[in-house]
Image (cartoon, rainbow, N blue to C red; front, top):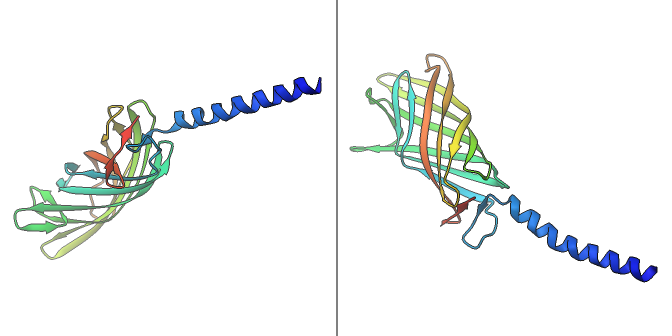
Amino acid sequence: MFKKLTLLALALAALAAFAVPAAAQAEEIVTDSLGNEATHLEAVSENTIYMTGLGTFDCDTVNLTLEGETGHYSGSGTAEGHSGNHEGPCISQPSGLQIDVTSITATLSLDGGGTGTADIKYNYSFTGSGFTLSCKFVAAGASVNYAPKSSEISINGTMVGSGSNCPPSGTISGDFTVSSGGEEVVIH
């Protein structure tokens, strides 16, 4: 009887040893080129547009640095614009106001099936002729879409604004290329 119980215990231990890695693999939504879970992500967009009551904010480059695992990431980023001889803050069209994005925080949740959500908060200031406005926009629950087995995500959502004389609402849209350590990742 003791021998049978020992063999049963060894069989269960062996089964558990193989089942745990399989379960862990199923939770990995973003992997590197070797198939390992990517926990440090860089997401770069070169076409992010913010539409507001003051016009379109055109940011040539938005960079996000995110940390996390199993499809849930958070971090911060920067945004800047380049047009003509201007390099630095984003530009509002058609007014030409400079928009200095002073901080961005973001959370990204991917479901492993081609969709997810993003919460993006950013502080910015408008600089015009003799004035500066400090404002904030929050896009909570913006939709994220991606093709499984790709390294690209699209973010689209509604923003709520705050700050004296600032736009009360707007929209955000942008396509991001996601990498880890300078190498493309695979989003499952």
